[in-house]
Length: 282
Image (cartoon, helix red, strand yellow):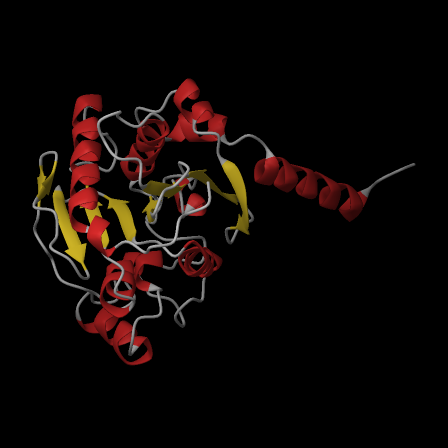
């Protein structure tokens, strides 16, 4: 059979897309993310979350749920594609969640999504925004989004293209996917990893953690369409926002482990009494 012209182009295009969408992602992640080696990525055992980015890239995730867990924690990295260290930290934390310390109660079920914005991550150079040019962390359906989001973008950011909130709330497949995850997984806590401001932020009920590792609490406010605004203020699900000191370098391994330990302790102390009485299926 002879294949020529646009038929051949279509075949090659589809072959490349299918390969990138369904192949093992670790080679790509290791090549792009700091302090991520192949054994750590492969050990994460990522699964296809049955969702795609604007450019058709797979959104990957990992669930870790000990039997009898009663609290659900959703951990997100890479909402901004040029904050590569945030995605790398998520991989290190997957390994820690898979081997929990014996002296900590096993009450936490985890869902990790290490790279919510793969199109931004794998752009050359990496970009904060997704393939539509939308800042995903301004695209969530906070109250009065239609009134406030564009006004804030124009007056406060002076039309900064890196902070374009989109034509309307939830205009992007990546934010639609994350909203579905929040609605189906029903997290008791959301941890959103960013960079490079080197602080700890918090939105929502409960007393916030004072520090995680060397990051100290510095609540910087809320923004129209941000995840902290949507989850912590509107949905009353506490959102811990971690701002790593560098977008291109992770903290030392010992520091990442200390941040993890501090997060576990705070979660057990503050969220445990408010946990739902039903058990989480492993």
